[in-house]
Length: 271
Image 1 (tube, rainbow, N blue to C red):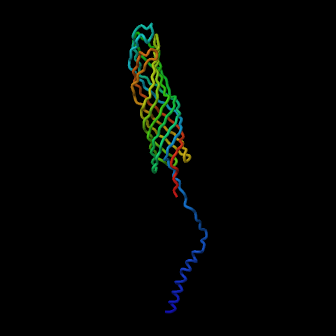
Image 2 (cartoon, rainbow, N blue to C red; image 1 turned 180 degrees about the vertical axis):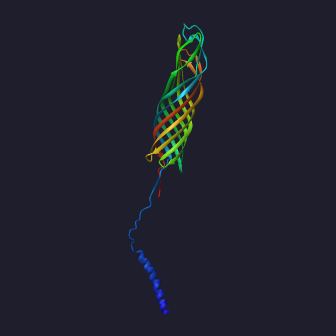
Image 3 (cartoon, helix red, strand yellow; image 1 turned 45 degrees about the vertical axis):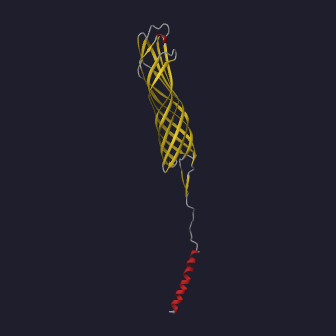
């Protein structure tokens, strides 16, 4: 029995000593590295940018019949007459250039934002107008012209983020500064009507934007603009005593490319 107690005591002392010694033995091939750092890009922030592009559209003019007094045609005019313009479509095309400012907020993969854009344009078009006349007026020809020298949008954006790539749709209000001219050649005179108007409508758009640095991104976007149908009164530019009441319907399709610089939240570092 005494021998058993001596062996048990010796084992109790030797066990922790052997474990401590084993811990001091180096393990061959072991490599210790820091955990990797994951960077999550975020679109949150305020941005400003520039864009350029082009597009086209049309206006549809539906004018009412109107009287033409002799005073509008000169002293040799034989008497009163009546003109009736037929419905006319004017197709427009041209280039645009401008800028934008906006705000994005990202939560998970969803990006919500608002954006305002304004563009200089030279969208314009011209076509022959067909005008019928009642004696004693005779029509020898006519021309209808339309031009947009500025347009813009104020819209909400909703997008899906795939890291540095953002796919988005947008919708809101659109405006365009329009100029119109109707020129009617008569025997024995010429009538020239013109008017200018800032028109509001609505728009829908689709786009894709890619961030090639933390602050800079490039985009491509398509916008459809419906400026509605509105009543417009034209006044002749010679005597001002001949009026045409016209309903004008306007639609536009615009494609633009641009760059944005973002001021906002830095990408998140996840360790």
